[in-house]
Image 1 (cartoon, rainbow, N blue to C red):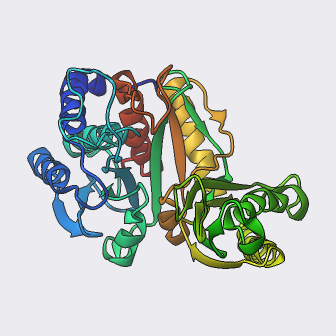
Image 2: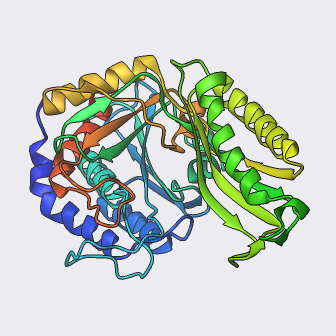
Length: 387
């Protein structure tokens, strides 16, 4: 089955929805306008049940098939939030909100799932129930966790759940997926190195936190090179180095480090935290300084389920002619919380030769819409064939 003809017909409408969302990006849980548009369109489509306010600003729609002898309930999830980035695309429909931008394609994800919902509500050519899930705050807010904690899976009896993300660098409308660990756990840290400030001409009277912190930055890389199994995935990145003084002739009192530790697998996540804290504390102590560490648990590793991944790949092959094995991704994805509660799979759809996600010149490729919509619709019609 190639791309469904109906989505070629709907492409101008879905593109218009997507570009409107792109013009009006909303961050984290502040997706009030977006959620309102989603809810209104679902009602217009004739979706059987529309609920707002799940996971603060999430939207859930229920579409019943022509029959329900299977008793199956499948969830389809799209994220709605944007990023705190200044857009630099120069597009006619560029962001009208200063400092906010759909730089990860969630506008495209939302529009594609709306298109699939319209088609499924029109045709209802399946035996069971579809739950369309529009989630806020994927970009660091944990909206997936919030929706699950609000009883998403239990309230609607979801048995399986599927998600999708666009992927720059892959041909438009192509697909890639992998079974097992796919996206990384993403933990964050704040480290304050407390030394003893002084005059730059008298370093012997100070405990220099800049020198100490510099050694800490280098030392934590030994976790990757000397503590972790070389064939296992762990990335330690110090991304901010701030001192308590910016004077030329002052040794500061303290240094503040920030960064992330990204891992695949619960054992590696535990190792990363344990060794990070030990290396930082003991390195600081060796220089006579003290280290205060604040560890922020982020998203868990996102793990695709084997059976559902194979099924999702078969559907993608039917839609586009092929489905490649995706690479491991050390970025985070809070669809992980939904996959911890129910079996399912997450797939990548090609976005073509565009800027990378989270880049100020990124843009979602509207040409990918028919393939993405077709994949979601076909997941439903193949998993719950009409009786």
